[in-house]
Image (cartoon, rainbow, N blue to C red; front, side, top):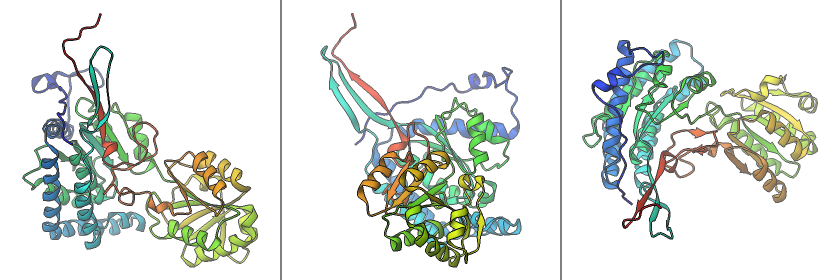
Length: 446
């Protein structure tokens, strides 16, 4: 459904040049800072135009982007090969290289995601609520674009396209700042997108200067940017939160867990634990902690530790885990292991005293991303689903489903572990705000 969209008034031209910087002095920007400001200014202008476009025009952009990505595949693969070679030469961890790699399959997945987003219902213009006051004034609450969204991310070229298409579909401009590890890939992807004649100038911007000093500077461009979303390591997110003048939606680290309850189907539990840890360990929805109910520990600990070891997983267990699996090589878990996001084939394993023991552990150590219970007991499961305070909670399923595509969103802008505005995988609805439209017939307030 289409609706009239708002424009945000922003000072332009000479007035911008006179605005003070953070020290209250006249601005004296470096060349790189001036370039960032110019990109942000162009994004604001792009957002104004996008906010006026009907859904059909926004969807046409996504059709053209999908086609252009397929056309530019050789250039994208060549650029990605430069990033992979540089990463391997620098001795980067294999999980980083895995996230960085663009293959024919992953590019096809990107394109499919674009086309899926294009087919999704348009949230803009949706009437969230409407009513008439006793004085005859009609009030309607409508979904509208946020405006300009800045996204800072690391080592994930697919984020470039996911972010761009989700923002375009919802009438938002975006400013992207990827990590230096993916700079060639990101340039190639944005170059393909910017060749699309239907995409307005400024609608999708890439900051291709990867100097980390520019991150705090970007976080101060509140006259142009409406929200900033950091996706990456703990230090990046802490920097953005500390420096930003702009509202932040955090894609924080994923210390996800599976709890195997005393009434679990242990064959199912083994399958889910292996999938959640091994299928792709270098992503935020892979588990880092396994909690085992003491009532089944004697049976399940030897079973799961043997299976994990066979799959190449390094196990860091508490004293009880080590006692129940004396024939398996298990490192002694430290306090730090319960809060560490390994992004690798490493798993911290602990035996807990039933459901309450699991709750106690999660309250102390969970990052509130994704947690799962394996049980045949529906009462225990419902308690877990109701009482665990995480963005996504599961019953008899792998945490690997915490993903925009798996949720039917086509793609995601990130997985928020915040509670305000957005939580969990962020799709189209999470990239909208709302406004109140009031229609009267001459009413005045007395």
